[in-house]
Length: 116
Image 1 (cartoon, rainbow, N blue to C red):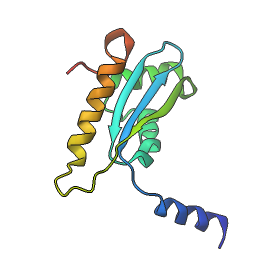
Image 2: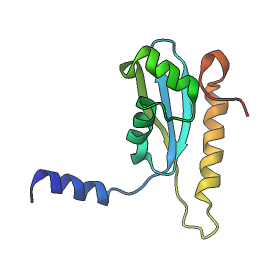
Image 3: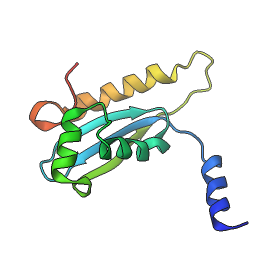
C-alpha cells in the first residue's frame, strides 16, 4: 500500500473526538475559545479564517492584519463520551465550552469571544 493510501486509512480509523480549542494571537495575547464536534476539522477553521468566512469578524480582521503565523491553535480539552443512552454530546460540549470561557475570560481586550 502506498503512503497516501496508508495515511488516508489511518485518518478514517482515527476516532472522531469532540472538544474545545483555543486560537491565540501571539502578537497581542488575545484568545478565541471555540468548540467542535470533530477536532479533525480544525484545518477547516484555519481555512475559513484564511478566506474571511469565519463567523468571528474581529478574529478574521486580525488574522489578515497580523498574518496566519501569528496565531497558534491548541486543543484545550477532549470531551469524554459516556456510555449512556441519554448522553447529549452537543449539550455537554456547550457546558465544557462555558467552563473554558469562564476560566480564560477571552472577552473585550482579552479576546475575540462575545460575552453571553
